[in-house]
Length: 195
Image 1 (cartoon, rainbow, N blue to C red):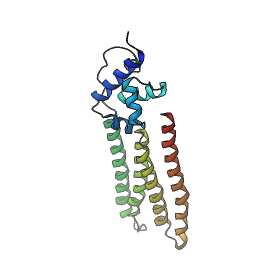
Image 2: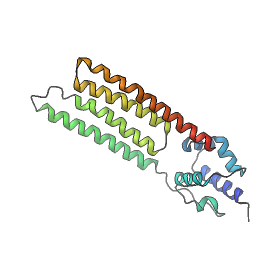
Image 3: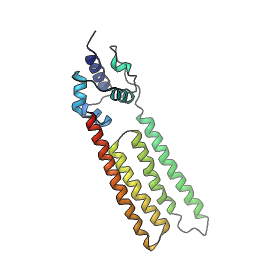
């Protein structure tokens, strides 16, 4: 029987190649370095059980398919497209609701700023995109979308309230932006330590 390290190495290399990914592309998707992936595929080290679970989930296979010596089956279809379609459906729903509100408000004479329904839809859209990027485990996109969510929410509030002193709420965005940046850095550093 082959060495367990070599079995895992062979299976990981096969799964990656069948998914048509380079080591660098895989590294970016699972937040590890390409050097760590290279070591795993050479059998120089083996991933922790948490990483094996993450890889099994990523390739949509069972852990047994990675750790046991047998012919590795081709990975099942990636869940990305299903998730992407769900995100687009959510995004379209937000804008459908905004459009319906706009049309309804047009028929109410006392409402003169019906266009604000579209302004409110912008932060809601960024919130949905943030959730989608969290599901995909993409820290950079999550940080960018969360930042847009914060600032467009503040913009929407300031336009809704429409007061002379409303500019002060933009100060709230500064510490929130700092929290988003520090959270992304912390997430990045935690994954670096795992390697």
